[in-house]
Length: 444
Image (cartoon, rainbow, N blue to C red; front, side):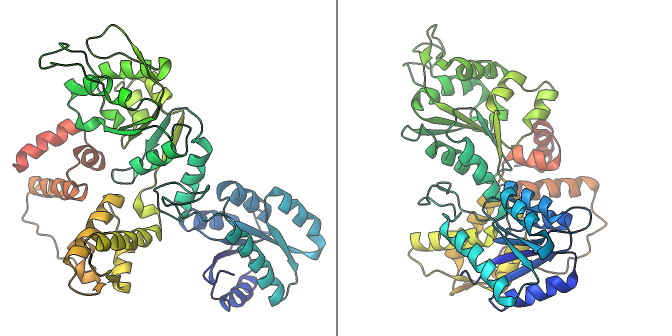
């Protein structure tokens, strides 16, 4: 039996919760509690658990409502219904609704521990949801995470991966959208073909069509030979169009044709070339809002987003933050042939509490730097970047102009997102043109 299981006890009786907590604590389980269904649902949104024990009769919403919610939203969580002798029939109904077992009141310590032990054994016999490159059928290739948010996302990806329908991967910059796109590719029928990743935002607008669709010799000045584009290179596999919101309107029309007809027309050609591939797009922008404002074609948006997969930001992934930090430390220590430094408890606390505006990319870069700069066998809080230290903040100077404060904030945001102007503009609530104008004031 897992001695580190996370168990949520839901009951409106504080005495019952305390009795269960004491019994479970003897087995070194981490025990959490909620006094209502609403409180339990809120807790589960933030914290993954292995087992939910819930009373059936509670005010406002019953334990049966919670059973159905957990069964649908958290398929990898075991559910045990607690019921009185007079309502065993209801417990059987609860099992049919998704509970993995029930415990009749009054129960002994051994009955409680036996019921939980059985639930954990059933959980252990399932393929664990630790997403890595060698994971089993339940895993997402190349994606690491055990939080509730990641489990929920992985469940959706596994359900839609086999379909050729358009998938739009959304999420903040640095959250791992390309890794999720790769997982979709490797779980799909196109897995034996190439995976071609394209950053649309990095291609100058005048070259986007040529880069994606290719061109014929003489199609424009400098086109001294014919060239295949990214779509043709991805034929038989998947093309991942990152920052799809940065495509110019003229290109959006041609993208729509590829999605509808699976035909690519190179620049300068009158003849289309058939392609068989899956298109996965990603964005950190609100495409629906862009459609509403007339900045993006609605027909292309609907084609791209038959299914939307939202990658959670790192700050919403709980203990995944520490798991990822330790993974990056081990990875970069091995690459540099250095000893693997240990994170102290103070460092772990700082890592957990930091908001990670740059998401997984920022965490990876910081852990890489810590490995290279570490001069001992540990990484402590004082070794981390100053922004992650707990300290008394100096009272800000009131002698600074509004312009200075604004420019300072812009520069700090840019530093956090590693110079990604699209993401910085999103955080600041302005468009890229306005950001460019403000950056001119900062200088080179």
